[in-house]
Structures are given as structure tokens and as C-alpha cells.
Image (tube, rainbow, N blue to C red; front, side):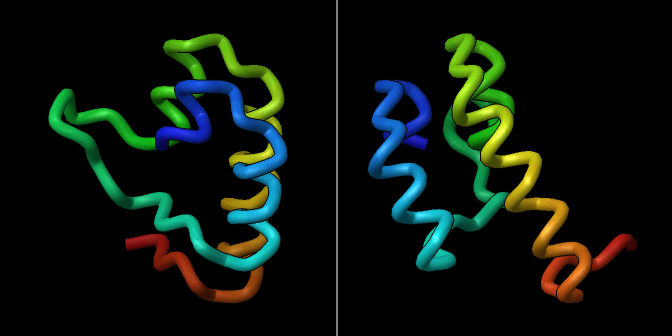
Length: 65
């Protein structure tokens, strides 16, 4: 979430590559990393998080229920 807010694209990319991102985490304002990327208009993070979430779904790491 911090990498998304501060547009630390290289850090976010590294975390995503290493699988160190939990897309279900919610911060105090009830926002997820994707929501923060939208709020802070971080286009790189938006795109990367969409791809990462899709990859996780295809591998069965994210339940649809």
C-alpha cells in the first residue's frame, strides 16, 4: 500500500514479482491497495495490480466466493 501511495513503482514491481502482496488487506480508511492506486492516480500500480490479481485468480490463490 505504501509503494502504491508514494508511486514507488520499482518496489511495487518487486513485491508483485516475489508474491509479497496481499490484495485483501484493508487499511484504516477501508481501502485496498487497488483503491489507493485509484485514489492517488497511480496508473502504473493500477495496471500492475490488475494483472497480479488476474494471475492469482488463474492459479487459484483467490477464491471467487
